[in-house]
Image 1 (cartoon, rainbow, N blue to C red):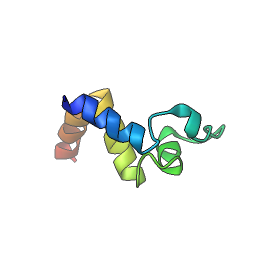
Image 2: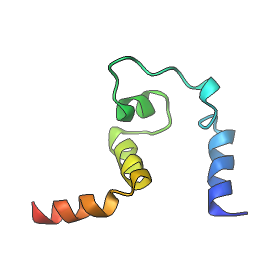
Image 3: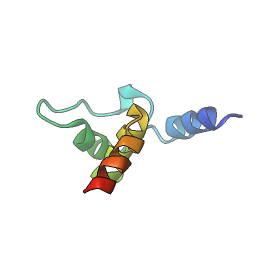
Image 4: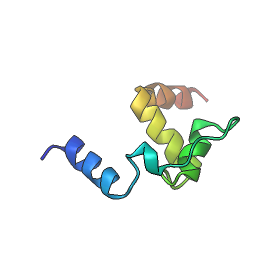
Length: 68
């Protein structure tokens, strides 16, 4: 079993991978807020962190924070 297949299996078992079981997004809701409201992420911070990782932007964020 690969880490990817394990993660997908865990998300599916938790009901977080099937869009049929998630609430629809609200019109003006951000993706971060939606992930928290749908129960996919526990906090806005963890939702944003997951999106940064998924978008490949975590290293860029870390570099920007070093300069602040």
